[in-house]
Amino acid sequence: MDWLSELPNLGELPGPVLAHGRGRSYGDCCSNNGGTLLDTLGLDRLMHMDSHSGRLHCEAGVTLDAILQLAIPAGWFLPVTPGTQFVTVGGAIANDVHGKNHHRAGSFGSHVRCLELLRSDGERVLCSPDQNVDLFRATIGGLGLTGLILWVELQLKSVPGPWIDCEQIRFRRLQEFFELSADSDRTHEYTVAWLDCISPGEKLGRGIFLRGNHCAGPGAGRLPYLEKPCLPRSEMASSFEAPEILINRSTVRLFNNFYFHAPLRDFTRRTISYEKFFYPLDRVAGWNRLYGRRGFLQYQFVVPYEKRGVIEEILRLIESSRLVCTLSVLKVFGEVRSPGRLSFPRPGVTLALDFPIQGQATFDLCERFDEKVRASGGAVYPAKDARMSAASFHSYFPDLGEFSRLQDPHFSSDFWRRVSGPAAASRRAARAAAGGH
Ligand SMILES: Cc1cc2nc3c(=O)[nH]c(=O)nc-3n(C[C@H](O)[C@H](O)[C@H](O)COP(=O)(O)OP(=O)(O)OC[C@H]3O[C@@H](n4cnc5c(N)ncnc54)[C@H](O)[C@@H]3O)c2cc1C
Image 1 (cartoon, rainbow, N blue to C red):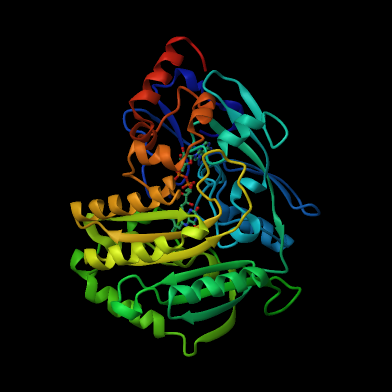
Image 2: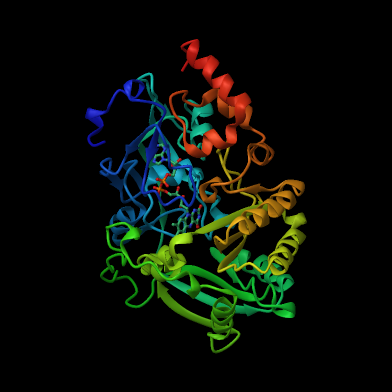
């Protein structure tokens, strides 16, 4: 897909169809076996940026790193960014991605002022918080199922420069994390924590709290030359595949111990570039290959704040399973509600856990997590999922009925076929047979 003037007739493509951004989702919301994938990377034009208001108008295949290269020298920044800059604006909207500033800014969708959607019946629909509001709300966090997003108008955020005044604080218990988070959310725009999920006994739940604010940095007032992103433009899959033996409980414990004690003091402060602060994984080409051929799975969930005891229960489940959890990231989401009907971010506490796949035991453990998340009224993040059941999905996203009404009947994904269940599938088939779009 290239120029907006050469758009295909989506209704005539062998269906079902699905837009594809950079494929940076961990699960199957961006795959469409047996159907047509619409490669949006050709929709990569930055059309206009108003350097006074920070309004940016761009095509949906533009990546976040391209926006940063343009915006930072003019004193603007992304209003919300995930942990990688190699995602498209369309992908960021479809998963309504969140970042370390959720407690202040909410999710990506809260900063979309307008977008144009191409439906499979050929209609082009302008959607915004005031126009075609239902379709706008279904598209934000809509998993690419309401049509193809063509272009977007985004409100950027004013910043003094590409630097972050960053503080690291060691904590020894989960309770300390929650206290630090409550204090820091008042003073810092960005907060998040790395958690040690594998060390035994007393050490379980210790971690490093990270918080930061934008600052002018060295050479205040003058923006330094921006580093080129470290990840080559060729995809992540290009580098070497590590032997599976490399990642086991002993090596991860060793790493965690080192990481926990690496800061010389319990509190450290320094000024670092935005890339170091936001995108540490982008600096390690092919990091996903470290898991070897078995691959890995990320499980990210959110539970209401008053149910935060679930975090400790889940850590105990990991401990008793004796499976390896390589990385875990903890954050308190704020109260800013997303406009998206199916958005994952909501007020509460979110934990993201990476596991090398160790056969059925890994999936069984995730089922046990699901039980706890469902019982606490929480949700699992579809962008990181390739296994949740239809029943779980329905319990996490109760607004599903209204969403299905607005979904484009010619659009689907592997994720959607798995979670929408037979009832939803037959409703869609009946609508398609009746010719409704
Ligand atoms: C290292 C790393 C760190 C991450 N950190 C975070 C994080 O902190 N927070 C967070 O929320 N997520 C995070 N993610 C997940 C990532 O931000 C999302 O999965 C994002 O949606 C990927 O965007 P993409 O362009 O690669 O889209 P894809 O993965 O290709 O597609 C994602 C969805 O967007 C839809 N889509 C794409 N383009 C369009 C379009 N033009 N129109 C309609 N639908 C479209 C697709 O159909 C699909 O449903 C991280 C991922 C990685 C690899």
